[in-house]
Length: 163
Image (tube, rainbow, N blue to C red; front, side, top):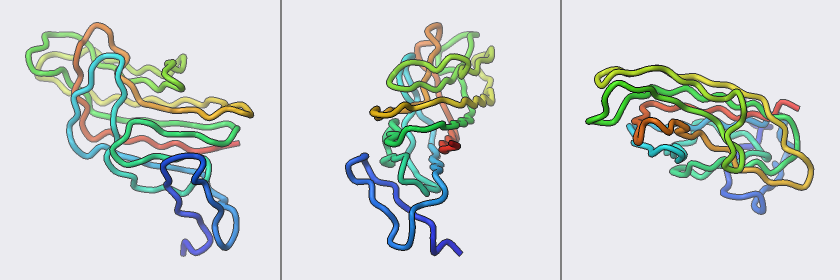
């Protein structure tokens, strides 16, 4: 069924290769974090497993927080997670956002108030453009400066080239 689709998930753009049969028609990557990770404010969430990687444009190494985008174009990223406060935190909020080259993408932040024993489901989606001559690093970050540590569970990210 997938004979003619690339299944490349390489570590960097210099390793990009073409399929033996034809160029990939799809350009999509889906990664997850299957365990809980505690992330400091301003830091990126690591993703420990690549579920689907059908792309010559987007690369991710399992365990890394970086998604390298090698080809100019229009991309869409969607991230979902369950977020909670770290032990010892009082009532505050939990957040997640998407960033390109360490700069938060405007409009990508999802935020919710959270008590010490609560878990909140956060989802965000954004469309962004990568211009010619640039390689970009996409990350899902903890943008919340009011909460030093946030715990993320079952985090899922989908990055796809849409144009």
